[in-house]
Image 1 (cartoon, rainbow, N blue to C red):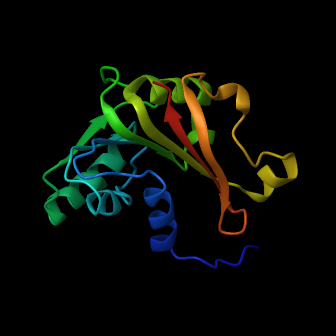
Image 2: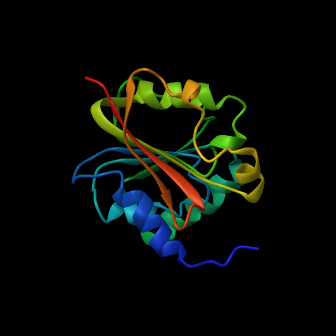
Length: 172
């Protein structure tokens, strides 16, 4: 059993601040879920924020938050991580968080992330490390999944090793 020594707010702040979002940046969150990171994105940018998720029920919850909080610069797109419906490259920042282990092809999802992020821009991936992951030695991304266009600029474990976080920069 884990003892939680951080809050959800602290966690989201750590992840979103690692993205280096600038005013006016366009942001894509893959697997946006209920939109928990959106308020943190809006602290840094007034640019377009796009949430991609395959699950209609997640969109419904997120859409309700968008309306409730009046986020005019947020759009939702239904689709999967492995085949984005976006032209390339269009985003200044891309985040895949807490979901890559559930994708049918994590390698393909990372390739799509590399395709849609602009050259010289950042893409971030984080994932929870479960007890089973720890036993199996899966405390990092499989290096074979990382596309050659992405350079690792930072790797860290957050909150006493409960999560890993990668910050990539797309090569120019």
